[in-house]
Amino acid sequence: MQSDEKLKGQFAKISKEQFMALVSGSPADRALLDQQIQDAEAFYTTGLSLLQQLAKVVVEVNIFAVSGNVKGDLALSLNVTAKSISTGRGGAFANRVVNVARRGGPNTIRSAMITGLVQDAYQDMEREFIPQVIKEMSSISVGGGKLVAYELTLKDFSAKEARRMRGKLDEMQSDEFRYISYDNTLQNTQPSLTSIRVRYAGRIERLADKMMGVLDSLDIDSNEPVVAPELTDLVFTRMPAES
Image (tube, rainbow, N blue to C red):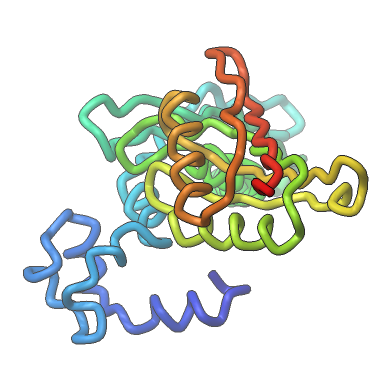
């Protein structure tokens, strides 16, 4: 959020009380929201989706071992596990073993060294484990379903048609569907190809139907893509205009 001024400004308008009301699942009319978003149900399916999940994640820390030697060296081993409580099913989705150590000496205060080890472990978690948690959470919908990565290939689409398609997908983003990025390096080849990467929490045939509906709404004629359970790539071939 720090790198997106628009998003940061949007969240800056929310007080702590409003945020707590949102993550507790209160309806919009009871969340004491600012007037500009009082009736905006769509607000719940924007960036707050990820925040709602993260606010319901428990990081469990278990001490495996504290070991040392006669020289005063100490080592701390932790097992950290992230568990989602955003749904009734819950469950662990990220895990890491953290090992830290410090060299001691004859004048080392062991309690202070243990405090230092805990700080070292926290820094390791902040550097390695928390980004892992964020990455894993980004692939899970608020409802708990897995957001599977799919590639939509537009074949023989004009650059304008591909732009319109990307814009429509961007507008459609929700807890269950996310527009990620696109690759148009082969847009000017024959045949022209544009790849659009999305994540969707549902069956591939449902995604294919959703995309065909988008194309119909844009008045773009396309062949139906080949759909099979093991496929994660849907190819939409532009049909030539009728003469």
